[in-house]
Figure 1 (cartoon, rainbow, N blue to C red):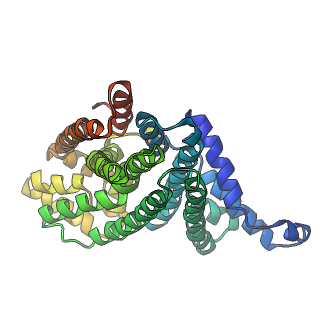
Figure 2: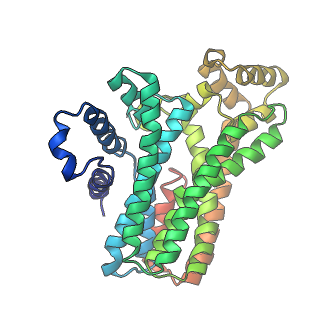
Length: 360
């Protein structure tokens, strides 16, 4: 299934599940001033769902194919893959509010677009919170309807809801990490990696693998073991790579402002490694910059250079290599246990490698 086909299906599902009126109310809509706002939010739901690489959906569908899922079950797997992408959009809408980000996927973030359309930051932020909730609920609706047509439907529903909870806990942890003292770089690294596991790996790699295998009819216990062993190191590597791209990438390639994590003062593994490897003067400068609540205190170019000279950029690359090796080892072990071999295994390995470009 191509990315364009996935995009088209997601757009139809979002339009269907995020509508805010019924036929009985249609006659009154022309004279209802509030309809402008509800229509605006519904349109933004579709707009926010556009773009993205659809890596999660593709990984789910590849896991389904590699486990030799029956063709009759493909529509269920397809819609559950789309539900996962809709959930991601919900998470990004909320994430952009928390981080006060203006750009997402090369377009204005949802809260910024709604604020500009209404001429009110308070109303825009409030509606974006509700938009994120609406999309999250829509993702469950789409998944639940599709799961009826899949094997292990109860296990699929449980896995999807557990994923929801993990990401929500991970988002709380992400905010909590901001309160850690920067002098303790080891503690910072430990907490950042735990956050990556809950907030990112849980729905970026673990859930797609698990849901794809379940849709194909794999044993639930074996599917969960495989998804965890393969997906956790891969998801953490993906997040480390994302942190790295934030400081050495371009807005054209990421769809987000370069250096956004630095300006927001985010506590990342990259920062923890910089604090560990920097000389005393650089370490003090980093602590001072990240301790200041004002974005203007953090010079992106200077901090990026500190990340390079301290060895933190190279350390991130080493971490990614190590995690990718763990993923490959788990692929060998668990594909054998699931009876996945040959071209099916190679296809799954290639799809996993897309989460860490240039390494697989």
